[in-house]
Length: 420
Ligand code: B12
Ligand code: SF4
Image 1 (cartoon, helix red, strand yellow):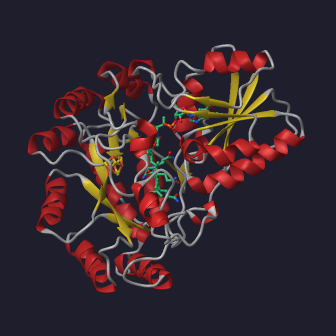
Image 2: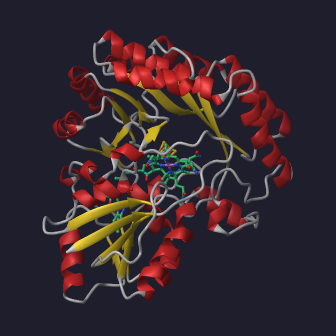
């Protein structure tokens, strides 16, 4: 049977340089499909959907809330043609009730070990309206190597430079942060994958540069250190969410090829200043993820935060505003306080203010978001800061002889300067 997996298009952050990372959920989902399924993948961000091409079943995979409305539109078109549509992925789980109106079936949970039943139901004409496996997570050992063969690799590049390949070494998260839905989605238990399977998957990837998309690697010191030790011989270079703030772990991470981390910067404390310095001291770059509009934020405190980011020499930064995504504590609180001003999921891009901030108007917060982007990148534009980050990886690659000169030539051309 032929299954078309579709990843709906969404508009990117307004102030951010546009680039497209390869999706991860859809190709991990594809790895859970029985062997007789002939899967194909369309990333609508980069290619068009040909709705008349023959197909047996359409699977729509959604990660972000801003994909939901487009996902529903796509499903409506197929269903009018008589093609059945099943939805899955993170944003499906977060918007399950509304998605039911546009779906033949809504799948909630992780797909491993579950698709045989779902597809056998489909073949028998008995597809269920809802498959809810949220409380029945598969053993983590079942996670297979993502089907990267389904990606059209040539589409994922930034001005000719190949993007990182995505991989994950764990699921779940022990923490339960205010703006985050992960406790609902993946459970509060940290579930590391067996290290040998992760290493095998990483080794199989024909790309020296990876993005470890794990929620946070900083959850189990021994596992984290064991993982990094095993990664050293691979000589891959990678970015990730936070790494544990421990000199031994940071040292191993650097030896394992840590290139840069996405690190939330939420205040102007000495702790944060030192945390960033410790990454830098280990040769690890930092992309700050800065969330504006928390209840303690004022105009002054936001402006001070931006000055601080420049002082601590973050390599790059991404600014967003607090967004009350469903199944987060932020949503629960702001809804209860009647402070949500838009329920249009197309506004939930994280760069539009959809709630009433505590200490300023929504318009003021919107203005401060743009102030943050413009001020941080005033003296050194995004492209220059990105090129400096590229330079870091090239230096690391040259040091261990994994650098492909073609990459350097392309990178130099892309950024208009010699990166060697
Ligand atoms: C990696 C990641 C990113 C990467 C994305 C890279 C990429 N191209 O994929 C980056 C860093 C770029 C990113 C950015 C952002 N992210 Co993000 N991200 C994640 C993260 C940590 C992991 C996603 C992932 O890959 N999981 C691993 C895969 C394997 O799991 P999965 O997708 O669930 O797939 C499984 C199942 O769902 C199922 N499945 C998947 N598809 C289908 C389809 C069918 C038909 C079926 C049956 C099953 C199925 O099968 C898979 C295997 O079991 C999640 C948190 C999380 N753990 O979910 C947040 C998360 C998705 N991100 C989130 C947010 C908020 C953001 C940002 C807005 C953050 C910010 N403040 O800047 C930005 C988006 C900016 C923008 N507008 O473009 C929110 C979602 C918010 C929302 N509701 O829209 C999440 C949930 C985290 C949170 N804070 O709650 N993110
Ligand atoms: S923000 Fe990160 S650390 Fe906090 S709950 Fe979400 S995934 Fe875990």
